[in-house]
Image 1 (tube, rainbow, N blue to C red):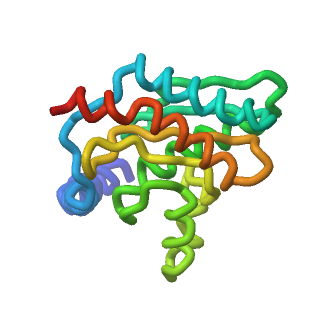
Image 2: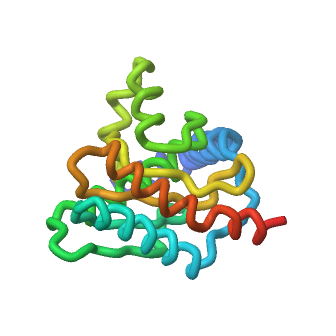
Amino acid sequence: MNRKLSKLVVATLPIALTVVLGAQGAAQAQVQFSGKVLPLELAQEAAQEALRSCEASGYRVSVSVVDVAGVERAFLRGDHSTIHTRETAYKKAYTIASLGPIFASISTGQLTERISKTPTGPALSTVSNIILLAGGVAIRHNDETIAAIGVGGAPGGALDEVCAHAGVVRIQERVNALHQ
């Protein structure tokens, strides 16, 4: 039995690798990636500003900033924000960082609207760490997403998104200057 299994693995491995590597190349071709990164200091400052913006409006939120690989670079949990806000903030940032470039979207609000018009849109919500709610905003250098910020906890995703946008605005000039 082991010999048959070994022969099967050896016979199918080249085909499987071709399929996997071919699919990876197709996905990478969809997204521009120059290797630019958001410095930690700016990620933290964007998160602080988003939190400050929401707190000024009386919203108790959490804020997450991720890089284009979905790695969290900064996280802030505001005083008295509820437990679910950490996960939703992260997922909003992750969603726009990963799907935004593919769907030419700069926010999860815009992305959700675009995806809702595609036949496969609902299936995307079953992908790990994807959440189709407003509240995530891309941090961009020119037309390239280099990071994203997500906010969770305001009474509605549109309000989360206003706070996330405030965080991006706070650092945008310096993001542009860093990568000239």
